[in-house]
Image (tube, rainbow, N blue to C red; front, side, top):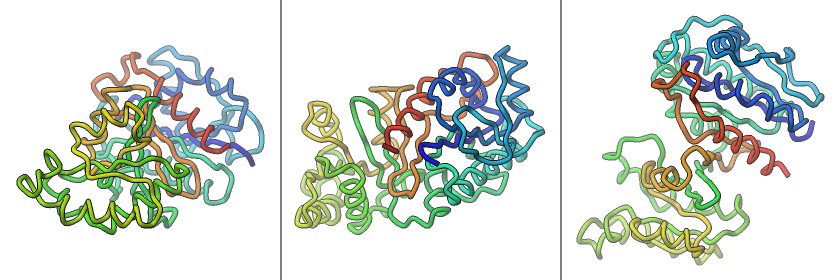
Length: 315
């Protein structure tokens, strides 16, 4: 099966169902096999609540037939819109696990994920920080990375969902080299910048020595291996230089260092990509948005962009 996409519904209590229902005309226009891993009961609920049309052919597993299909992983789920719950957590895990199972069988070759709520997921037994870490575990991938991309900027994260106070001890020369190798391979030899951890790249050790002891030695070794990389570059200038075309992608030391500029430049039009997996995986650049769930005002553009990028990455 070629160019078959699986879409996981995400958190039943969040905005994923609304986004999906709003995007059905777009999905149908692609005229490729698309499979929604979710719940008929949840989608029917939001269809009635928001007065959005819901008519999707139900199948038990992916078939080689163009069109948008529903794989009804769990029919009825007890949840409240915009509320954390164990049952919603179990459901969003089940949607994801079924999509991964079918991807391993070769029934789909791309997964697009709508957002999960990490607190609900944890209550439901999910032990991973997020999608990225779970997918790496599920596909037995040792070298992987989270990349956020839009038309203006690409960033890759060295560390992801961890407390800021824990970041310095999680930075190592080996981890930086691993990410640089993965970026080099996945993006076809791009121009890479490595962002510094500390202000002014540590100012020769005055504001921290991670650049001297870890980051710069890793960059030097990567250069010796033929990787086009520069760093450590102060994070108050590196993104400006990337926007001017000096770099294709920036390797960032921690979550918000990369996500703040990405979302500032293209909130709602950025895509989360997991590098290093045997299948394509993309996702929206936002969360479950409990504050607007069920109100009919969720924006579907990031989701559509994620689907388009999943298609592009398969060609």
